[in-house]
Length: 332
Ligand code: SF4
Image (cartoon, rainbow, N blue to C red; front, side):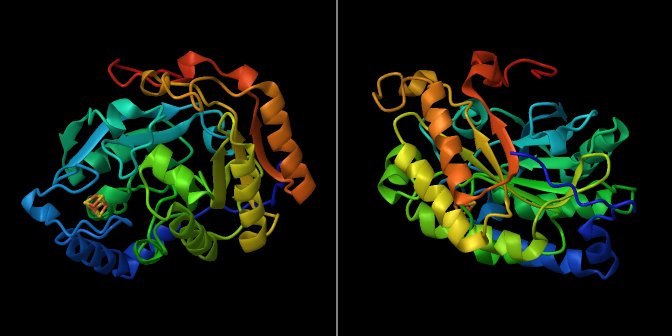
C-alpha cells in the first residue's frame, strides 16, 4: 500500500479553534456534562450519575484519570512523524477485551487523577515538545472533562490536530457532539461477528455500533489529508488488528468498510497481536499471528482495492510492543 498525499501548503487550523471562538465548544461541553449525570456516553448506557462518582461498566467515576502522556513513536507514520504523536492514555475502558495489550490501564485501572487544568497543561507541554498532534487514547468515558480541558488549552495557544483514538465501540449520538472538535478519528474496526465480539470483548452489538460510528466519523472529517511533510491533518484512519485463526472476521470487516465507506479510506492493518497472560489458556488467542495469516489479510485488502494506509508485518513486532504502564518514561 502507499500513502496518497494531498498537498497542502497552508498551515492547518484545527477544527476546534472555530468551535471555541463561536462559543459552541462550551455548549457542547454542557451537553456532554448533562449526559454524564445519567451516563450514556457509550453503548452501555449505564445511567449512573458520574458527577456523584457512581461507576458503570467502564469503572470510571467523576475524576479524570490518565496513565501516561508522552511523545509516542509507535503510531502510524503520518501521526508519529519525526517528533512523535503527543499521546495521552486515559485510565479505564468501556470494552474489556480479553487480549488487551493495555490491560494495565483498561482492566487494572492504573493511573492518576488529574483536573481539566492539569490536562490542559499536559496538552500544551506535548505541543511544546514538538509533537505533531494530541492523541487521546480511549477518551470516550471522560469526554466532558476533556472538552473542559480544551476550553482552557485553546486560549492558551493549543493549535495541534486532535486525534480521537478509540476502540470503535461508540455511539453516533455522542460523536455528533464532537463534530467541530476532532480533526483525526482513529477508531478500531475489530469485529463483524457479534458472537466473537461478545466472546473476546464482552460487547453487545459491536458491529452495528461500530459501523454507525465509523460512518459518523467519516461524515465529519472525510478522507485523510496529509500535508507536504507527510503529517496527517484531518480525516479518518481505521485500524484493524488481525487475530490468529480469524481471517474470515478480517475479510468481513474489510468488506463492510468497503461497502459503507468505499475503498479510498485509510486502513492500518495491524499484525502486532501478541498473547497476554490472560489468554494463554485460549486456544484461539494463545499465539501470535503467522506471516501466512498476515499475507492472507493483505490479499483481502488488495482484492477489495484498498490502496491507502499502512501495513505492519508480524515479524517486525515483539513482546516489547506491549506497553508497560508501571514504568516511568518512554517505552518507545
Ligand atoms: S462511559 Fe462508562 S459509565 Fe458511561 S455508559 Fe459507558 S461504560 Fe457506562
